[in-house]
Every structure is written in structure tokens, then in C-alpha cells.
Length: 492
Length: 95
Image 1 (cartoon, helix red, strand yellow):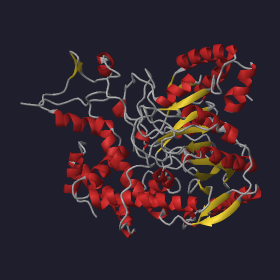
Image 2: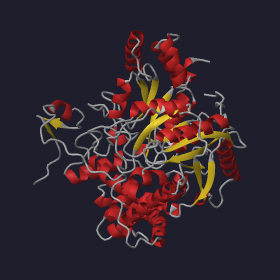
Image 3: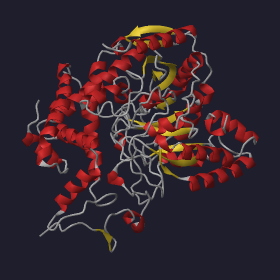
């Protein structure tokens, strides 16, 4: 088994025992990346930076004082600003943008000795659920069952494809409405969205600031625990970053969940949900019960309204955040005609630079925030959001420790299959994941089985705020019992 | 609520995104579809509910009001599409 297919945990142990060097481990990933161009996962490769960081990691490993992430080769979602390396949020409006600074998350990972292999494909400004809105073109799911090329999900589609295809050991993702968990489920990997405020947002291109949160996308729950550890912590540069201690996540993976209460929300049993998803969910319930957990039916009555509330709040915040792309300070500026003034410059620049989905969301956001509609849409959505959060608080106060739901309403679908669909149809992909962002809770997607065609399906566990440690432990139990070890057959 | 072509034009203008006249009907239709989906929120009784402002109840931290950064003009201007003599350059704003 070549080193690029290892988990972080296996690589860490091999590196620290001196069984492999960080340079060799990095080389095996760089080779896999070059052979994986068809997947269009890596959109800016950084082999020089990777090898320099790997050499530094080897020196640190030799000194015997290396943290867990030292020498681990990662892919970085294009949404993270990385100093001197193109960071364009998969948008033409940021074409050529090379930040003069490093995001807090990547800086923390690099301080811990991690290696950056390159930047990963995604939906433009993280707006999408299929990686089809990217200025770089579609990322492709390494899972395949017929002639069709399938979506790896989105927005962190490049991250999911890269990890599932063993182009890297793990990747960073971001999640505003499900953008870590849905692609993780579509590609048979693990993805965790931490509690809002657990990971600094500084230096990550903003989509919807009250919902955005970064997290790891990995090959195992243990890897998620190890990598999340290195990404977390208070950052004075993000005023919403929580100044609370970060527990030892890996140490929390005891496998003991006896007596814990797992809630099963009846509202997540949707009309028209494929039987396979239903069966998978039932299987997950059995696994947790078998491990000694008490399974309890619960109700989250406002679930139905999460999606419409999200599609008011997220575009509203996006329309404000994306106002900064005006052709003045960075990125694209349209060629102007004789006599064009500053307004024409803004309008032409933004029409050329933003793709259709991003334009649509900016305009929806502009509309719901405009005079006369602010109360009817935006304020009402924020009130519904308060009720959604209250639903969870009530359930947790009643003694529930975590909640088990499906991660997605289907397995991965074909690229282009949603092209003629109404935008709202695409939004339904996020139906099981958005509630978690609206309530600011931690959520994790774990691969649990395959559908009849042979495509991966995942379940989602939702935890109490700041309780990622316990959440990872439940996920670890689910993972061990599910024993999902299948990898996509290599066709690329 | 259905969005008509005039409203779509106005929203595009407010968003500072140029939309060709020919594309306005399609845009109006899509915006109407999305807003129609949001109408579901009207079913919810929100009497007495405060709009949620922050995800976790927290007081924003304050920092000392001192200069912590600066003197990086070249870095600030590095990515500008048009920078001249230490400034961002834009088309003439005032006639």
C-alpha cells in the first residue's frame, strides 16, 4: 500500500519511528496528484513549497520534538488564503490574487509541521452542492459505477475527491450549510464541522459569516480528531473565535458510549426519502444501541423551516461580504469603455467576475435586505433561526447527548444531471445539514455503507455545543461497527 | 411574491451587477422561485421571538486601542488591478 493512501495516524506513527521520511511521504502524494489530473481536485499545485516543508518536517522529526501533524501532506481548499499562493475561492473575480498573509488555520497547521501539496477545487465562493459552480470546472468523484462522471458534492468537492482518491492524507474544508459533511458522505470519507467559534475564520474568504466554519476532511475519525486538534483554538483576529480550552480529541476516542442517549429526530424522516437511506439510518441506530447507547425518539419541530431560513440568511450575509469585490483592491477589473465611470466599473467587473449562482445569491441577499423587505424576510428568518436553535437546546436539556440523522438525501449524482433543475432543487441537498449551521452545533459525517449501485452513503451525528470530543467518540463507535473500508476502484 | 422585470433590474442595480435586458426575465423567474420557497417561513408563529444575532452568547472582546500593524503600503497595493503612486487608481469619480 503506497504511502499516499495512509491515514494521518498511520503516517504519524511511521514518521515518528523513522520508517518513512516526510519527503518520501510527500513525494508519493505528489506522484498521485500528477496521476489524478482527471479528477480536477488540485487546481494549484505547490510541489516546491511541499518539499521545502517536508524537509523542515524531517529535521524536526529527527530532533524528536515533533507534533502529530508534523510531516503530514495536506490539500488546502482554495477558500483559505495562503501567502504567495493563488487563493481565489474558485472565482474569476479573484483570478491572480496571491494573498500577502496566511489564514490562521493554515498558519496553525504549518506551525504543527503539516505540508501543503496545493489548493483544492470547490464551488465558487463555497456556493454550491456539486462543485459545478467552480471557475476551474467540475471536480470529479473518484467513485464511479458506470460511464457517468459523478459529483464529489460541494462545496468542498475538491477536498473530498482528493482525500477519497488518496491524493493527500487529508484536506481542509469549510462548511456553511453542509459543505464539509455532504461531500464527505458522497465520497466515503469523514468530515467534521466544529462548533461555531471553535476554529478561527481569519483569512478564510467569507461567505456567510454567522454560519461559516472550517474543519478537517479525513480518511478516519481518528484522523479527524488529530487534525481538528491542530486547527482549533482562540484567535484574537477573529472576534467570534471562542476563548475556551481545547480538549485532547484523540484521547476522547475511548469507544465507550454505554448509557449515553442518542436522539433520533422524527422530522428527518422525509417524504420520498430513498429506502436505502432509511435502511442505513436504521442500521446506524442498531450499531449505537448495540454499543450500549440508549436510543430515544425526539422531535425538532422547526426542521422543515431550516432550509428556507438558511436561503434567506446565507445570501443576505453573502451579499454584504461579497460587496468587497469591486475591482479596486484585488482580483479582476473589467476593461472599460470610453466614458465609463466608477459605477460601470463595479457593474461590469462583478458581472464578468462572478458566476451565475454567485450572482443569483448576491441578488437574493440584496433583495431580502432591501428597504421594505428586511422585516418580512431577513428578520423573520432570524426569528425562525432562533426557534431552530431552541429546538436543539430543548432536546439537549432533556438529556440527549447526540443526534443521529442521514447525512444526505441521496448518494452522489451525475455531473450535469442537475443542470436544468430549479436552483431550489439543488438546495435540497443541504436538507439534513443546514440545521447544524443555523444552530452553531458540531456535526460529523461518517461513511457507513454502500447503496445498491455501490456508492458510499453516510450518516451524520450532531453534538452539543463545544462537545466535539464526545461527538468524535460516537462517530468512532459508528465507524468501527460499520467497518467501512471500501475504496473507489482506480479508473483515473 | 413574484419578482417582475422592473424589480429584477432594480435588484441588479443595487447589487452592482450588470444584467443585460434580455436576461432579466429569466432572472426574475428564478428569483421568484427562490423567494416563493422562502414564503414557507410565513407559516411559523414567531410572536415574541427575538431575531437571533449571535450563535453563541458571548461578549465581544475588546482590545487595547493601539496601533499593532502598518507601514505595509507595498503589500496592501500588491494585488491591485491598478495602483499608482501609492494609491488605488479608479476611473474619474467627480466630473
